[in-house]
Every structure is written in C-alpha cells, then in structure tokens.
Length: 143
Image (cartoon, rainbow, N blue to C red; front, side, top):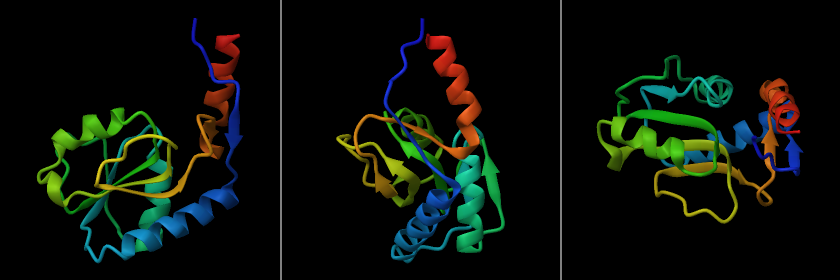
C-alpha cells in the first residue's frame, strides 16, 4: 500500500505565473546565456515551457540522454534530490550547469547548481494545477 502525506498545498495558476517570473529574475542575475531548456516530461514540462517564454528561449529538450551544460534544466520541485542525481551524469559539464525549480523542499541540502523561486513550508505535498488528477488518484489508491 502507498503511504501518502496527508498535508498538501494546492498551487494555483496565479501562483505558478508569479513563481515563474520570480525564477526567471533569479536566473537572469546569473548572467549566463542558455542555448535551450532541458526538462523531464513528468513534472518539469509545464514550468519549462513557461520559463522558456519568460526568458526568450525557443528550444526545449525533453527526456534527453545528454544535456548540454549551456542548457537550463527546469523541474517543478527539488525534493529528495533523486531527479538531480539522475540528471547530473547526463550533463556535458556539470560545473557550468544550472538546475532551476519552482519550489525547493525546506530542510534539504541543496546542490550549488540549484536556483529556486520559493522554499516549501515543510513536508507538504505540492499539488500543481497540471497534476491534480494524479494527486487524487494517488490519494484514493492510498486509502
């Protein structure tokens, strides 16, 4: 049986727009040029598309085996660090890599490559507008 956290935070499209704008400002301070945005199809695709619009980046690479170090990697949340650990070996030059997320889990140790818009309040499950159905399915399955 799956164990679900009972506490959750619903994030609205207005929140997403605000976080995306904030994240793009934080990334622009880095004074780096990005040739593309890289992401994974689960979780990162919607934030990657929105961030591409904010930053004027036309190319989005999805689920690639090799990630150019001048490609901005975008995900919805830095949580356990598992996605980062899977992605970093695929990056051509990890020392020049930027990993951007809308949220970063409070209390975690963050890699130096991480740029985030906002920290979570705690361990609550973040429910994004694009994964409400998945959250309901997981919640029903856990009961």
